[in-house]
Length: 69
Image (cartoon, rainbow, N blue to C red; front, side, top):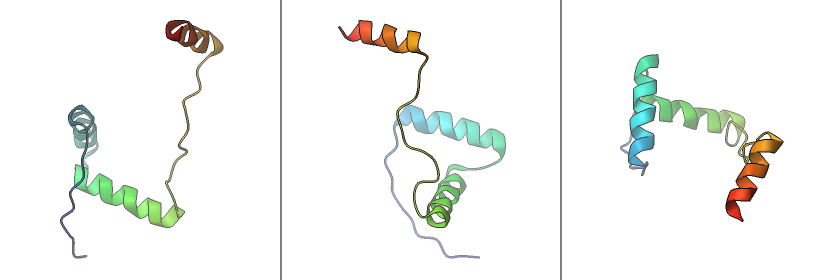
């Protein structure tokens, strides 16, 4: 078994709660999920998913712009 090292990270309370509930349903704890993510970062040589703004339908984008004006 690999040795582990304690690591502290800051996560928004609600984000953590939602993630833990979802992960428990999958039979995975938060520590295992973080380890899986970090191993993918290493394998992919970067973040293992696209980081970009979400794309909305044109009607939603227009409504959002109207709210900002």
